[in-house]
Amino acid sequence: MKMLELRGKLNEKKVPSDMYSLDGWTPFEKMCIEKMGGEWHVCCSEKGSKNGLKIFKREDDACEYFYKCVMWDFNAYLEWKNKQ
Image (cartoon, rainbow, N blue to C red; front, side, top):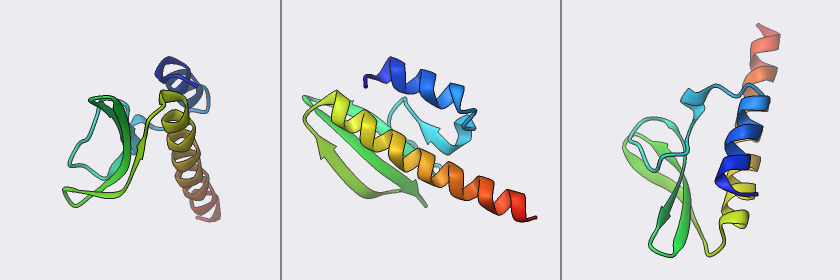
């Protein structure tokens, strides 16, 4: 999966854009993906820090991992919301 497909899948699933950043790291609480040099970095931004940083050589691998992480968070949110 490439970034364009990733963006489309997240939009299709109606994942709120405030849960993630496809435009690189941000200090706000969300999952982030960015290309740095020849590597892809995926992390969770928490309290201004990069937590759980994973580094990938291939865009496909980074996007797949990012998608799985975001969807796990989104599904947990939906479960919580449905219990309210």
